[in-house]
Image (cartoon, rainbow, N blue to C red; front, side, top):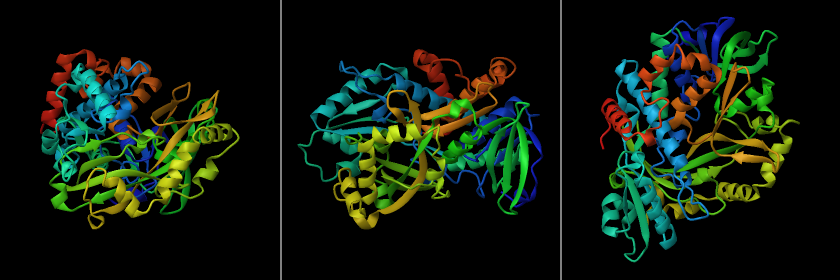
Length: 501
């Protein structure tokens, strides 16, 4: 992206302003531009390129979240049945993303799908009789759904050796373990995808992109529009920009910006920053023995985002293995943020939520402290539960992105930690913000359509409807209840995205 991007001055007024240059803003800008090419849209990104924070390849796990392997999406009910409703809805959301990306490829807006998406089987792996029985019942239940057709289950060591030779190496034959495998899984480089979309917006649309521009405040005006203070970080120049509609997709910085807007809907929200770390191996001998993303269960007291997994990653055409995540803690809300982010986010409106969430999550606090204090050799011990003879010299520690877990007002507990992705919209539908973390990037298309449904309901149901169905053919339909449509959509995206399963 050229320097001309940093020398232009934003106009004083836009129809739409998007704050942040991650996957969410890039998706929303592309959708809006397709719906109405005459909309005047500006994107402000505080860093020098798109997708440098949470969307960057090494700052997230790169799992195309389809609920094939994530056990926390299929809880066991008190009566012993497995609830797969959340898994189905997450699988459907990822199918929407794939359809949208297939559309972008068909239109020639982006090229080379292998740069950002590759087939990679998704597996769940559990140890011991009890968990193996849970996994068997989960497999049985999920196999009834068209979305999980083709999922295999095995406890047989020979079979498991075929699937995960690296994990099965040096295993005791008597160890009880079970796994499920879904070949349709993917590894996604959301950073590359976002930059491809950014390049399209920059070169082939009238969307204006401003890098090194930071939005400091979002203030309501009497006429219902929004006024923002925008700082050009290169020339230290400040100016005001007005917009009819604002989307805050600024990752960890969404919270303070949302707070500055004074909308009633943002009251009581707090943020709890959690960083992650991975053990990464580039040793190709190891990499060749592990072609899957293998998720297991979170340990007792650990938050759902800390489920250990051993993954194949494909970044810029190079394969690597990634194990983690290990939680970290920093008071920054972004990787390139400030240590004052957390203390400055505390105010009278969210103090009760923050304290309540902390008080009810003392085990989580303890867990984070233990994780942060871990040495590399302690982390290697965890890895050896997966790879018996893992050697320290084959693995390096890499810091992942910052996540800000949302803390929500809760009448009973004061506040509670939310682990999902939350869309906050004011009642007039003129400002929207995305808060939270997983499943995040995978569900970008669903999340942004959710924003548009809340903010532009007549248009989505009216003049934009045909275009929307061209971009996301399954929109408005439940794939779980429609085997024919599911098959049709999956064949179409498989071909366009050049997936191999």
